Image 1 (cartoon, helix red, strand yellow):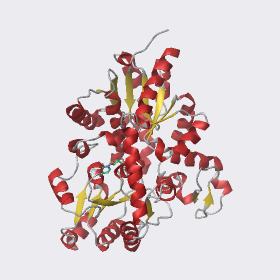
Image 2: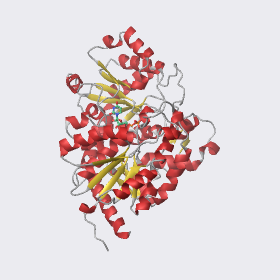
Image 3: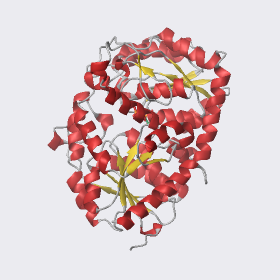
Image 4: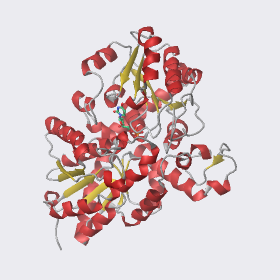
Length: 494
Ligand code: UDP
């Protein structure tokens, strides 16, 4: 029987081509590469390789770790997409999701060929849950495949339970609240808040991919989850009790320790680090509201909604950083900002970031006291890691589930009050989900209410637990060791 040492191990990481998968998976690559004698190679496509190479270069500078990178061409045109489209950030409309997934599936053969030639011989594949065909590549090479989850164990359990409930048949109207059975906490939601709603309103035909993911689960060795046991132990246990293998190894963002790592995590920020840090340093502790709505943008945020958001932030009378994604910065929005002299009106207390914010750097700054978030899982976990209470504004997919975790289970957030998922596809210019008043009220509640102290205490406790989990001897740190051990065991069996 072969005896494997870590120096024999070669981990292959394959992220889905989207910032919210690439960013945490590259953090995991860094964490694995810090383990003695373990080789890590990331597989991606040429355009994504540019971003990934800069993350690798940065990691080498700060922690001296070496991570390999190999590419396969992305068959955009073959799948009916414009040439050069290799990342979900660039998807022109929700209709483009389907061809994007098709193009991803077409990577199966080239990746299989590449891995056959790669030295040292690959030991396992860790790939995004939305690349289910990687399980076939792994089985061809007779190595285990692990599913990298960019959602919490809570959301996974809630999603699976709702799916089994067949809500279309069992629940009346879209706005009728129903209790989700067999959850460790009481969770009440509506049909309008489920990911199925996103698909119904044109969020891309993901049914095919969801079925493939379910099939792949049967052949997948287990889930590597960007979460930590102490935060959602009941939900991790629930999966394990159903016979699933789960390794919670996060929050992975905490591996970014120095200022440059935080600043350059993922993509280059649209603001000069000096300007950003000087501005944050000039504010009182826990006084700043930071607003950011993630990277994906299945749908564009309407112009009317952008304006309401700006007015809400202004009306809060607090310092704020407001990130407006490039795709939301239409000429009408720019015209409004200019004509209303918005930036002059909030001068000294309002900072607008057009494009990409250095989110982990901002959240970890002591002057930030609240985070208006779309409840993407990475953003949620980054706020938990920084101990920052949240103002929840879920938009689509599983974000309403994350809101339940933040507000009802962890009790570290306040709702803006959005009741239904954003409609996908063509966005009407006047579509508004959160009004100026709603936003102002939620900000006041987070920053001024009687419950504020308790919320901050709980957020601080979770931050400390998260940090401890990732340190030497902490649960997430040990889970990485156990994951490596599992790979060794699996190879012995082959
Ligand atoms: N992010 C960032 N700056 C931005 C927007 C997003 O650094 O201006 C990062 C954020 O820190 C997180 C990821 O992009 O790691 C977004 O992932 P999330 O799961 O929160 O949302 P999604 O992009 O999937 O909607």
